[in-house]
Amino acid sequence: MFKLNTLRLVTFLSISLVAMSAFNLHAQTLKLNAKTFSMTIFGTTNVHDFQSKVTQASGELVIANSKPQSMTIEIPVKGIKSNEKLMDTKTYSAFNADKNPIITFKLTDASSLQVAGSDITVNVLGNLTINGVTKKVTLKSTGKVIKPGIYEFKGSVALKMTDFKMSPPTAMLGVMKVGDAVTLKYTATFEGQPVN
Image (cartoon, rainbow, N blue to C red; front, side, top):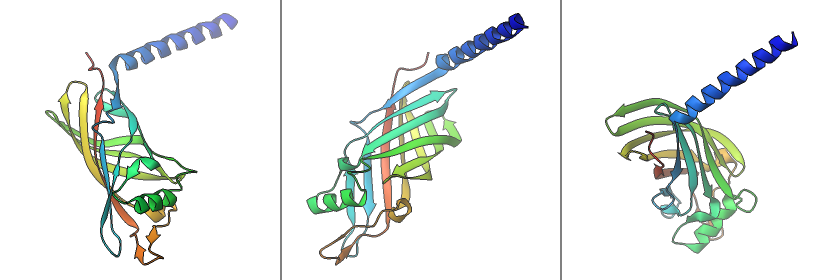
């Protein structure tokens, strides 16, 4: 009985190692190019519209069998910059940056993947964590293969600050009030060694 169980265990481990090796042979890990990454936050106030730029980001994308398997993007809250110092201070306060300094997005599923030549269309479902609150969001992205091992994606997503338990900032003793809704527009390039 002991020999039979041992044989089963060895067989299971062997199959697992073969499966893992096959996955690794076809998996491709890509890093987010922080230099070319672009994200702009568009919002409104009762006085004027505003824009803030994301100046720092890091991330990783794993592709296997021509489909995204995992993706993580991290953005430091204090890497969000506008042209107004007061606006930045209010933004960091709204994000509760000292307690929750990082915004994260983690892929849970990639659906409706369509590839036509070098052009890609995909809906990316994932968990977005802001201010310590995690919500499911869908990123509708279009992309293209720049060259083997380099993929560029563009898209936008509309969010409400109150969904993440954030209070829209105010200024000038409450005279200027920021609207709850914001739109994020992004361009992200992932790079890695091409799969042979």
